[in-house]
Amino acid sequence: MQHPLYEKKKLDGSPIDGESSEHTAKIQSHLGFHPFFITKLVDNYRAHPSLLSLPSRLFYDNELVPKADPNRTNRFLGWNQLPIVNFLLFFYSICTIDDREGNSPSWFNAGEAAMVGSWIEKILASGRVRPEEIGVISPYKRQVKKIQKLLENENLPIAHDIKSRDGICVGS
Image 1: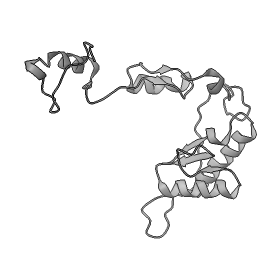
Image 2 (image 1 turned 120 degrees about the vertical axis):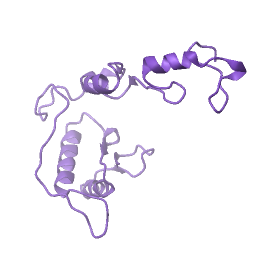
Image 3 (image 1 turned 90 degrees about the vertical axis):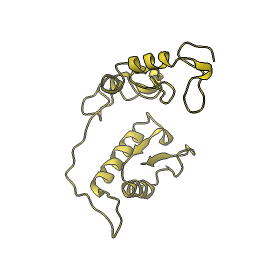
Image 4 (image 1 turned 45 degrees about the horizontal axis):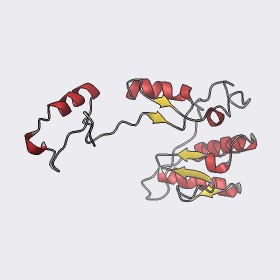
């Protein structure tokens, strides 16, 4: 590829045919990362622009570009279940106990899992989204299992594989 940002390199990273790596050093000092080892992805096709502003400012030097379809990202604007009707982000505080089962190193919180289930039911009842468009992320595998079991008990479709896209995806 012929482009000023790219240099021909050997596998060990040294220049080919005595070429200078001065250009690479300039790129690294300007961008803050080595362009041959890290690619900064800035186009976002999933989130509402208002949800991108903080991470864009904190982590991407204001370079995130919202490219998601507004018909998808605006579906919940004006939904009466949101604490602030025209703002798509909120934090829900719940005072419940973190727990572990037996010798498992993984934590879970049954109260939080129940709250997640309740919100998923409200979201689905709104008719604004299909189950396969919902994703839940938890840092704890046991919490993932608890949420999956809770949703199964409510007869909600669960995607047991992230690639299947046949239900609600819950993972860590």
